[in-house]
Amino acid sequence: MVSGFTLLLQAQTLRQVADQDGLLVGTAVRSTPLSEPTYASTLAREFNMVEAEAAMKWWVLRPDVSTYDFRKADDVAVSLIVSHFANWFALRKSIK
Image 1 (cartoon, rainbow, N blue to C red):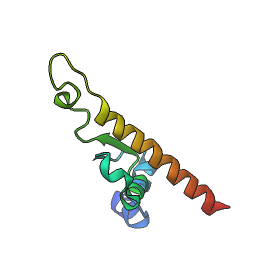
Image 2 (image 1 turned 90 degrees about the horizontal axis):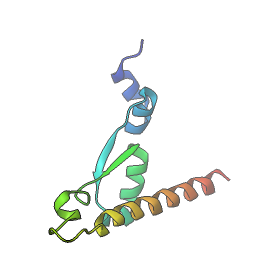
Image 3 (image 1 turned 90 degrees about the vertical axis):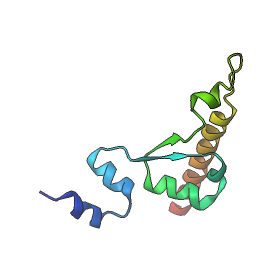
Image 4 (image 1 turned 120 degrees about the vertical axis):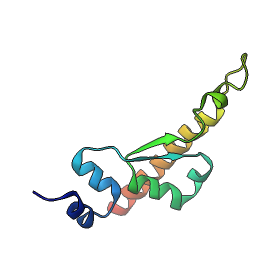
């Protein structure tokens, strides 16, 4: 039986260790830094799950009793989708 510590030393990323054990490892993200290539590639490499940091908090989604505002949550979702496809296309290009 291999210990978790041994697997951690053998694996290159947190995501690889988590994937080997069928675990989710994630982090909270904001939409603004997702446009930075280093930040986005680190998220994709190290984590298999992300959570919107503050964009899904109740006071952000519903700033007053008569208003719902999903713009910040939408920004996070769109940024993650764009980042995902950019990483996917870069990976496909490097394979060819």
